[in-house]
Length: 67
Image 1 (cartoon, rainbow, N blue to C red):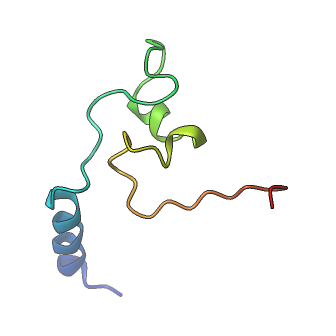
Image 2 (tube, rainbow, N blue to C red):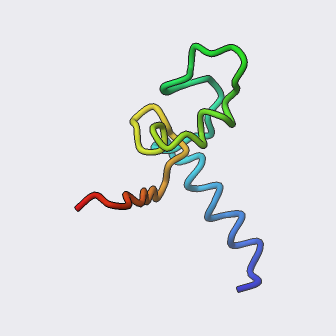
């Protein structure tokens, strides 16, 4: 919508509000694998909706073939 200042304010409120935070440490199924990093962890399907992922604000996971 072009209101970049409002977008920055809104995003900062979510990030700094206490419930969500940018990930700074390894987490999830491959956390012990030294050849991977936080970015790897964030993009594993298995890690997207776990409590350890504090970056997940609105997570939608598609499960094809599961009813």
